[in-house]
Image (tube, rainbow, N blue to C red; front, side):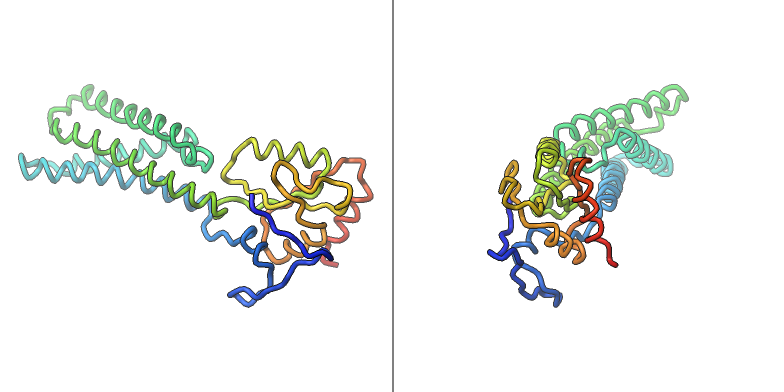
Length: 263
């Protein structure tokens, strides 16, 4: 994990950035701005799934309509919309649009194909029961099934590549700083690192006891004191601060909260 080093006196070297604010270049890389929310990405993936299913069905309809002709296109449109809606809602209920799940390609592909197969099966059973299956072209049905599965699979593979790039860049994660390099902080860092949650980006550890704590914890370096952290927080360069101090450290906690208070 990349880290920034302070000057020997504990200060951060100041350089102007393009926006006119002053910050340390290494700190800027660690605490860069996130432009897209996780909710927006999840919504975009869901909308993309809906559109891909509709696209697959539309392509198959055009192909078979030119070859055979279909007197009732509205039935195909309604079936396509129902299938796309069922798929998206079902996958959303399974948590398939959460960032942690979106980052797991094997889970995505397996659940995606299962949900798609179940969606198609339910619609085929309904069509058979109400005796309307004969009004649909078998070629259109089979083509839409396989084209939809293929497009969804391709989209997930491409999205995984993009997601890995964004995750390495820190664009999707909540930028988290930890106060406390003692045993509590070490256990917390180990747990967060083990979770491998792409929505979490540990940016550094801060502790006022610089001479009595490790310089690095599970690859995460001690970046400075709480004064440095407060300065970064006020610049909006981090999203969350986790205090990992023992409950009996009442004096240190009070001092920290008083320093973070604007007054």
